[in-house]
Length: 576
Image (cartoon, rainbow, N blue to C red):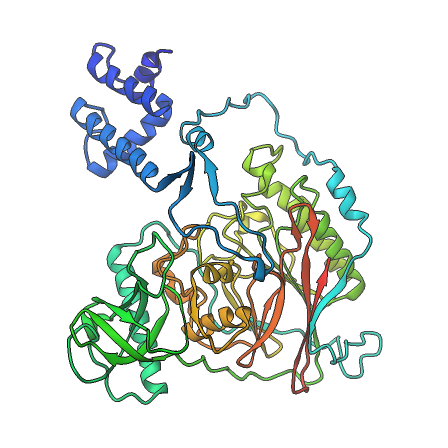
């Protein structure tokens, strides 16, 4: 098939310029590009290289070399194992103790090459009218979900001996009291992303290292720090960021642990750590720690002791007298993989109408890019339209029945209804037509203050990322979920990994928005790990699980906040 007429029309070049046309046609054939896509790549290349938008042969050859490098880079990022292609990073991880099945990490060569050279799908006819109502029909999976034998069954509890609020006889609870909320930390504001500079990333990382280093120095009353990269015979104190000798290609191990110093302490240089003398440690890339030891030869720092940063302090706020807060917490997905009926969400809201909670916290994704109907482009309406019809209308119906309930909506990077597929995220956009005064749009992460109780929320699977990278030796905290959540508190940030996980996008210009300056009463961290609730250094750390998992019911949490009880918090984890 000849692309020459389409190339002439797309690039608006003279038919007599045969050498340019043939070169462009050759690129289209080799890299399976349409002339329109090639034009978009050429315009991006021309703007970057500051050349003329009219293609010339020398610059076309440079573009061709760039496309070839990108192609080869994609191939080199994968290695061939027995006729299959697998990513170099890691290998298979055993997540069975976390309540997860093993994740398949290999794709066949045929699948990889098919995805790499996949031609664009046939365009949908522009004459087909957009439907005004979402075309949704029940499936066998949704019917099976609605007819499941048991629902809203308690799986586990925290402080289960504390009484549930009696909303019919409210001498203690006084449910009609004024509901007050605010933020202990300012919400994330809209910002421009993909404009970060290497200098900004470097400065942000250096500031974080120095900040945690100052906390360690104050906590352990260290007089002065030394440079761990300089040879010496006396033991010194130092601090820095844990990184790997293998970069981001492989998982960290005890033979490849490096300590990256701060600019002031060691000009940002890295030194290899020898932890053979240390009896206990728990480390991961991006963790800032303090060490004591000796560097005898200038190459290897022999560590005698490791110092972890102190926990953040808790801000004390006025607790409204005789006001018990009943709160339901849930994380998406909210619809089964086989349809977009949002049956799990509807089931949860029907239960809320009976229980009449004071607060309902719903964390995305509400419409995930990973949903089969979205990833395969089988939608018959705009995602915003589906979200309004299937989610917002149901929430408004709930609020009309429960006149004292407030709802908080928190986005997720996988939500297709917002523009920020990265972390941190501003609140859901205004074009979603959410106007009810008791539906509050919060950012991700956010630090809420509800009637004097502080609640920190980070709607990203941080625990899975940490569990994948952490290495341990005789850890003091044997419970892994408690230890993983403890890392976030000790590092004073909602995302301590560096470099960040390959599936995450972290904007270096917004590190202050993911800073965790104080210890919340409740720290909510949704994860695909098995649901749990743990007490960690005075904070209740909660993973409510997902409301549904593919085609089966998931879990959610019910949290009761008491004003005048020592424990103050009761949590029930329930199967939907």
